[in-house]
Image 1 (spheres, rainbow, N blue to C red):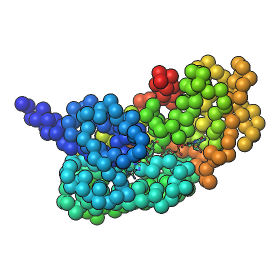
Image 2: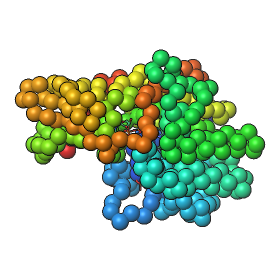
Image 3: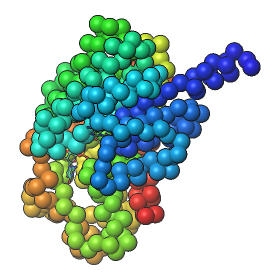
Image 4: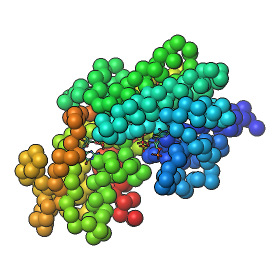
Length: 349
Ligand code: NAP
Ligand code: GDD
């Protein structure tokens, strides 16, 4: 065996522990690691009264799953003690921004204290585990109107409980890296989507509605909140690859992962409907704004203020130059391609 194949054989025997493996990113990362040839992939799943494994059903037999919860420090400690992982990827989170204002304490317990339990355990056990923390563009708050691209050095002023909980988590990670020399990477992920996205996030909510409408499963309009918000939307498949690359670097540091382009919720709607031959025409203002099908005059989109946020971010757009330069990572899916992929998958079901 050559030296490099021995090295890659050694690497592929390393153990990965993924929290949030049933979610969008966790399930995509688990698939990607299997494709790369890794054998030991462990995941933390929560006890649930209904099935929550839809995203990992196709690879279920190739994974080792542990019941655990980030709010239960003992369970986290026990899982890490039993696995002694080489990598921990912390995707588990109460990840819904609006819900974070209803579940404030729970959001902190999961998103902030959860990573603290992980770090404490790895430190106490003296492991040399490489740790990844999923940070978010929500940490910036309203720092740009679209002209300034947000990067690793931009000041952050989060406006949601979710964003504040994640900023505190990133600061804990930075402190542990500086104080104890641990390999800890946080990446500031801008919105990223896929067919594995939860149905309460706006992109998948729109896509699911269009698939149902086309398949004649619904005739009612789709109700949404803030149609003018702009987000930097990328593909979860591209973003998960960047996370793998960050963990293969010699030195840990934080990275922004973004496409550098921003689009409004309205633009997403227009493009997605166009793909099924429907042109949306907007009329009215604020709560009275509606989107009508040009071809049939039927109202397809309505605003329902119940989906408004107590406070929202108007615009997000990120600068991933550091990741492009240091990781040789690039975004490879355009906004239109992302919508096409999500819609094609939804129309199959
Ligand atoms: P997601 O689909 O909502 O998945 C969240 C995962 O966390 C699920 O597996 C969920 O389990 C698990 N989880 C929630 N609370 C938990 C707890 N208390 N203990 C253990 N597990 C728990 O999120 P995602 O889109 O994959 O995002 C992955 C990570 O990246 C999250 O930390 C998110 O905050 C962050 N992030 C995401 C984006 C994005 O655009 N997707 C952008 C920036 C940052 P169940 O399946 O049982 O609910
Ligand atoms: N969810 C939702 N539902 N959002 C809506 C709706 C609706 O009916 N109508 C309009 N929106 C607007 C929201 O007000 C927000 O401005 C935008 O659509 C995007 O909302 P989400 O898809 O819920 O995503 P998010 O930006 O709040 O949060 C996501 O991205 C963050 C990164 O910036 C989540 O994945 C977070 O976990 C992630 O950190």
